[in-house]
Amino acid sequence: MIKTELDIFNMARVVMDTYKGRYEKAKKKREERFRNLNANYKPGSPLFLEERNKIVPDFEAEIAKARNDLMMEFEDSLMKLRAIETAKVAVISNETKTMMSVLDCLKDRTVSLDEYTVLTQHYGGKTYWVDRFLETLADKCGIMDSMVQPGLGTKLEILKTLEQNVREYIDGYDGENKCFPVTSSDKYIYKMEESYTNSYSNVRLDSREQAKRMISKALNEGSSLDRSFVLANMLRTSTPDIQDEMLSILAEKDPAALHDPTMQFTGVKNVVDRFIKTDGELVKAASVAMEKADNAKSHQERIGILWDNFDNRHLRKKIEERIAATKDEELKDSYENMKQIKKEQEQESRANKGE
Figure 1: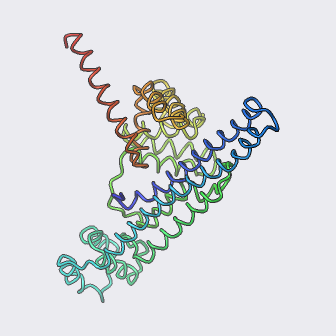
Figure 2 (figure 1 turned 90 degrees about the horizontal axis):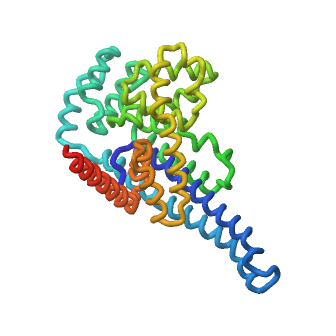
Figure 3 (figure 1 turned 180 degrees about the vertical axis):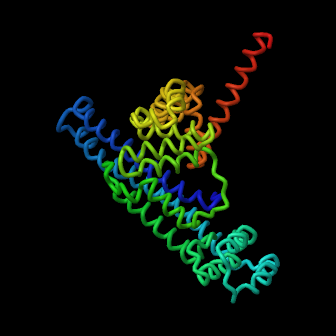
């Protein structure tokens, strides 16, 4: 279910990452079956030939199923979002008519940037046709940023491009990380997302999502020195919760950046040192545990791995992100059960201590 216009772009990233994971898992299974062939069967025997001839078709069938399942879910969400965006065009409520009648007196006037900004703050982002009026007014007055979301045609074209990129990635991925490095990158998808909303989404992002965008921007700066200064500036001007999220993501994506000498003299040394001392190893452990869980042979094994590392708050964040992105009901139920068990254990422990 698409809750906000930004969900589809997050889903695109998850679909590509999930397909990559399932491809790699199927590939490992294929390689293991080939390795075990000589050990378990007599070379040249009918059973040997039968098993050998099934390995590649089974691999291809598993990959085809993963491709079809993921694209079907993604295309279904795209279809729903297109329907939502199209429906906005057809809605002309009394509120829209009232606002349009008020703004109509400005259609032949030239307004300043300050005046236009006030108008968008008051009227923008409420209805489709008022946004189109403001967009036209901005164009007439030479204001480059309309400060409202683009029209239906632009949005549908962006969704079409997004769908093509995801399909090309899934159809073309062959186990090499270099496959489609640009169109599958966070930076590229964030750029499409910004174009889709004109950076005016009316959606309040949580601290981790804000941190993801900031880290993505910083890591794409030109030189190592530029990256370090941008990261330092972001850390110095962020709240503690954003700082922790940024450093957690940085520890996953580019751990060497935490130890860059530039970070030692830009006013954030204490922040970085504190994180490395308290959370650095936890982030690594969370990533390792999540990777093991993804490669588990059964749901029971997966839950066992997650439970063994459940006290790690970074792992819990990863689980919550996975549930939100994939709508994995089985994982969600297990996660809620684990939280409940952990809560009961803590209550029992406090009771035993007489607290």
